Amino acid sequence: MSAVNLKAPVTVAYGDGIGPDIMQASLDVLLAAGAQLDLDVIEIGEGVYRRGYSAGIAPEAWDSLRRTRVFYKAPITTPQGGGFKSLNVTIRKTLGLYANVRPCAAYAPFVPTRHPAMDVVIVRENEEDLYAGIEHRQTEEVYQCLKLVSRPGCERIVRFAFEYARANGRRKVSCFTKDNIMKLTDGLFHEVFREVAAEYPDLEHEQWIVDIGAAKLADTPEAFDVIVMPNLYGDILSDVAAQIAGSVGLAGSANIGERVAMFEAIHGSAPRLAGQDRANPSGLLLAGVMMLNHLGQSAVAQTVHNAWLATLEEGVHTRDIWREGVSRRLVGTRGFAEAVIARLGRRPETLAPVTYGANAPFAPPRARLRPPAEKQTVGVDLFVQWRGAPDVLARRLQRLGQGALQLKMITNRGVKVWPDGLPETTCTDHWRCRFMNGGGPVSLDQIVALSARAADAGVDFIKTEHLCTFDGEPGYSLGQGQ
Ligand code: NAD
Image (cartoon, rainbow, N blue to C red):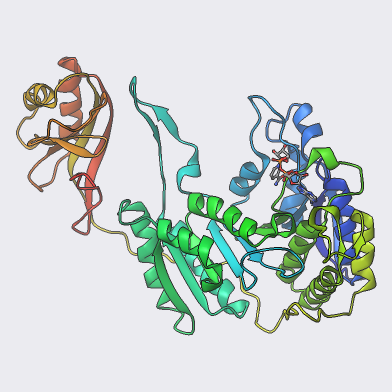
């Protein structure tokens, strides 16, 4: 009879720079605490980039990730120069790791911060928004980056944030968006937040416009608990939150998908500290604590986290957090790991101890299917490169209008310049020219015919964007200028 392997399979990468030092230290602590892990080591980073793999990961590494579904990753050094792709972005997108979870807690008075009561978790959407990487130079003067936001993408991340809050004994979920300006994309995120929040009456919820929300977060972070955000805001504000907690070097993060999850420190490979036994392994160790919780090994996660807090408050510190009067014993990477191991089973006395496993773990949520909306095409925006006055352009384009499709409006960078534009408006060479049928339906043939007439007339159009309604609601901005 073969023995059953109760150990959780985990893919491990030691990375570059300080990666090998801090990974060894973290694994030593986790295993000493009783973590049941079956490790499969893969190589990523500099050496793999040099062997010609443009994303820093070799094809066979994917087999390991597909098999174990859990990745414990040390930081890598991204080579300078063109032609190299970000390994993290590649992994997140390839494996569908849609949720980036970053706890940002203060450890005052042992780590200095202006916000000793701060304990925020940022849940950042990881796959959509401006990170699709679809950019175009459209005219001599104007460049574009597409911001893509999907309803399933919003639903998954928002529901993840509420599930995370519930499973971790949190009381409130806040949402940051800029839907006063981006009414369709950020508006969708906000709308989904409102819908999903109604499914969690046991949790408080609130909405902030991202700019004032960010200011409040920087000033009074203790007012927040879990915050869910679209990709770009989350990217920026999770670094702000980690910094003001005083602990950029101490923060871990999780990247969670429906099938695979990745755990890592938020800092990089600190090449100047490589191989010197000086780096602080805490960020990667706390990422390891998140991994143990993900694997259902919550008792071990709790033991490690509490021993780590006890080590911190006893003043056993690496050089990066050393402070006269607070720190008592200067240690290197290995010495720090040994100090945590020596305290396994202890709880902190000043800092609040953690308790894990009280609530059931949750499966990463999937988006729910919705009945399709009734879609109707009602017009087209013709984007044109042109230098000159808007009225002259309008007269040229009015001649293209035929039957159902008539020129209704021209905007420049979103500001209406025809009809009834103001002479003060600064115009670029990039014009959005809207053709509609007074709200009635328009066929694709009519749009193609309009484009053909524009081409015949020598109009330099650089793209068309169809205007559709969905269940009667306009699926396009109204272009009044904001
Ligand atoms: P970094 O985070 O490596 O270093 C920033 C500063 O923090 C340095 O002064 C460094 O010495 C210090 N530091 C970082 N981690 C520390 C630790 N654990 N203990 C003590 N001090 C620590 O950022 P960087 O210098 O901008 O980037 C270095 C390399 O890391 C670059 O190649 C970058 O592309 C890469 N990077 C990788 C990841 C990742 O793999 N997830 C993330 C960020 C940066």
